[in-house]
Amino acid sequence: MKSRISVITLGVDDLERSLRFYKDGLGLPTEGIVGQEFEHGAVAFFELQSGLKLAIWQRKDIAHDTGLKQTPISPTEFTIGHNVARKEDVDSVMEEARKAGAMIIVPAHDTFWGGYSGYFQDPDGHLWEVVWNPAWETTE
Image (tube, rainbow, N blue to C red; front, side):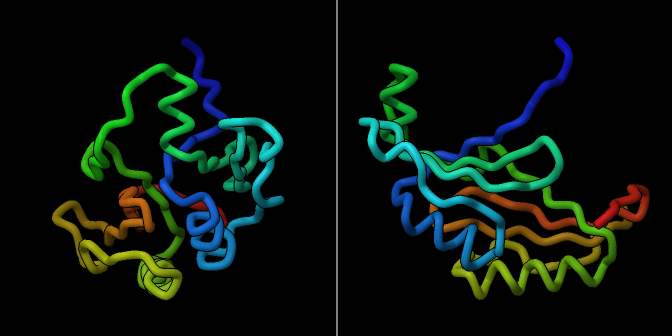
């Protein structure tokens, strides 16, 4: 399989609340909620980087679309890694997330492998790791 991942979709319980968190709190560009004219179709897309978008879609609508039973939230199923170019950027992004309403799970700290990272949860419990890796070159 050739990787062609272009959208990461997060299931949310309150679309408006999540829109405010990602748009107003974190400043991710979006056109807002679209697809409201369709039952189970309301979704918002955010530009992350060239060729990659973040989508938020209600968990109940994902369950409907897939035919799967909606399950309880499990924040340890996966993390989203947000890599930054400088160590001090980790602190800035963590503070921005906190001000937006995120719960800080692990404050920014030096890691055992030589990097610097912290974890926060968005309003629906999705776990984000903000990380500076000195071995990775990240362009802003």
